[in-house]
Image 1 (cartoon, rainbow, N blue to C red):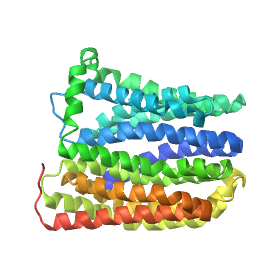
Image 2 (image 1 turned 90 degrees about the vertical axis):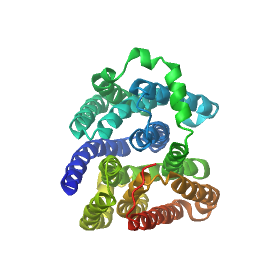
Image 3 (image 1 turned 180 degrees about the vertical axis):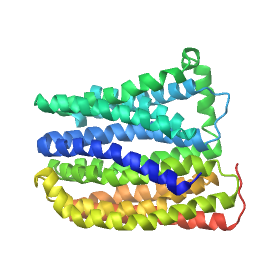
Length: 401
């Protein structure tokens, strides 16, 4: 497989997808009130935290966790649904943070998890053709729903979440139902077997590492919601929306490298893959630089100068995105070497430090201080991962535990 060609194709398709969602997101930023957008940002963060906690974790476990082949996909699906229900039961006492939108947030989260289940199956089999067919079906439904509510002047958080739900549910019904077996779906015995398999050393730490990464990714919004004002929540939400376009590039790289490295047979194969990726990271630098320096022009244009403070925040996040793009893909090498315990311990330690210090950063230096603190923290994590993977590859010994 030509790694650079495949990466370029995946990044291109992801960018088309993200561009359409980006236009919609920019419209939401521009036309929603500050209070409504602050609520929307928290709702989307909650959906992404829970769906990523469930789906991204199981995505990694499904691809690199040595899943028992006797466990059917349907049981894998049932487990995710049950975990989602459990998570929402646990956060239900804090429902006031969602201002009456808990039910629709739960439904949107469940639908997104169903959709991501389908995409995980396609990714694991390197079937990116159907991966993107399902993705573009989601986009079309989302766009049509958005246009309807926009022209009817009904652009509210609840209505956007309804679109969010349906745009995930319909592709699942088209592509996902045929992957499921009703008997296995209701077989709690298989679910219990799968639960026990998660307690094995590598999968246990892979699960915990993935959970910490997801919490780390969205902790800033939660901290701002707790220790700052609605305006700064909205500012960060706006900057985070633009930043999401750059994260698409990073996610595209992980999307290909995770299964590709996992299927590698020798250290030489892994080195070749990462060598090709290194070329891409160098080529990508001018693109990131252009985005960062031009943001002071395009952000005021997009949001009608509604959130001027979001420009600097976006620039900091964008620089962080490039550093992550350059170093974080080496985590896939550590997955291959079954170093999930190392990753978990490192991320968990820094996450605890981050949670303890960030309230003081927000109070003392507000949103800019938090963004810089976030950049420094992610750089430490990603660069340490890079160094560790380089040391492992120097041994020229590939062990699959």
